[in-house]
Each structure stands twice: as structure tokens, then as C-alpha cells.
Amino acid sequence: MPAIHRPEAGQFVVGLREEEAVLTYHLEPSGAMNILSTVVPGAARGDGVGGQLVRAALEWAQETGRPVIPTCWFVGSWVAQHPEFQALLSE
Image (cartoon, rainbow, N blue to C red; front, side, top):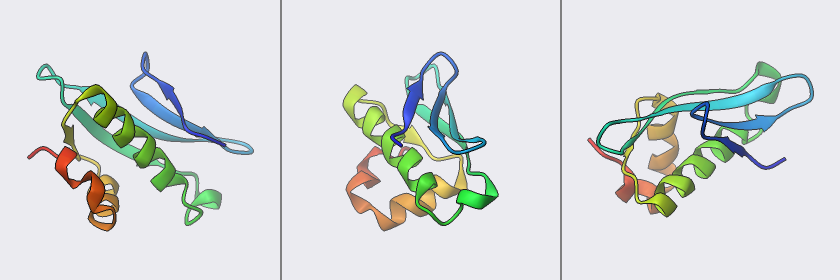
């Protein structure tokens, strides 16, 4: 299932059988996208759902010209393995 953007909630979500995997972000006054957390239910961990959420969020940031603040440790870890998104990260 693809990640769905819920801009009004500051979230990207992937619906799973009983729960949702959720990436939560906040838009800073500067316009930067601060990714705060990525939560994947235990049964779905290791299946690439977290990466799917991060990719969707980063692609949206790229399309809208927003730098990304990777407050969530998982985002920084994921980008280290996907250097094509490295330029989006803001310090």
C-alpha cells in the first residue's frame, strides 16, 4: 500500500492490517520540514514500511523545495543508505 500524505495532520501514513505506520513532521517557520518521528508497528518492522514513509516524505520535500531537518534518528540512518537524498538534509 502506498504512503498517503495527510498535510493537515503533518503526517505520512501507510495503512497496515490493524494499525497505521506513521511519519510525523512539522513545518518550521523557515519552511523546512522537520521530521519528528517514524513509528512502525512491531509486526511490520523490517518489511521496509519505515523506508517507504521516509521516501514519500523526502520526495514531497524535494518536489516542494523544502530542506529537511532529520530530528528522527531513522531518517538520518535511512538517508545514509540513500545518498541521492543527502542534499535535502539541513543542519
